[in-house]
Amino acid sequence: MRTVRLTEEQERQLDYLARQKNASRSQVIKEALVEYYKQHTTEQTPYEKGQALFGKYRSGESGRSQERKKRIREKVRGKKGRKVSLMKDHKANPGTENRHDH
Image (cartoon, rainbow, N blue to C red):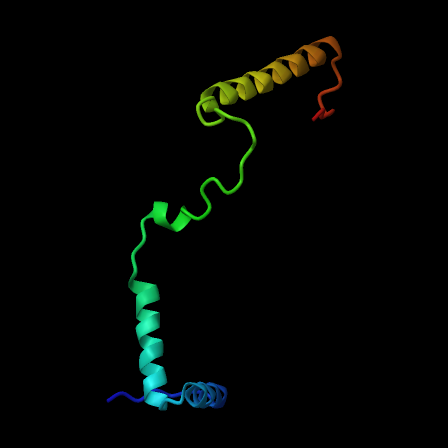
């Protein structure tokens, strides 16, 4: 046997559930503990946790994941190109070092 201290509100909620289920307080608490235990001991893999979200939002572009490296390369090159162009602008127009073009 265990003793649990409940607030007055928790006791009211427990009594309400017991009446609704036509069960004793003890039965309601035991059922609640079983459910709590199930929820907190069921170990899921990261895949299982995210499975409901996989494929939920689509880009509409086929082959997107296969072309990932290519897109990353293009973005990096694009940033380098902007940096080179800003350096050229600075050399051509000294005194613009505090100007930020984004």
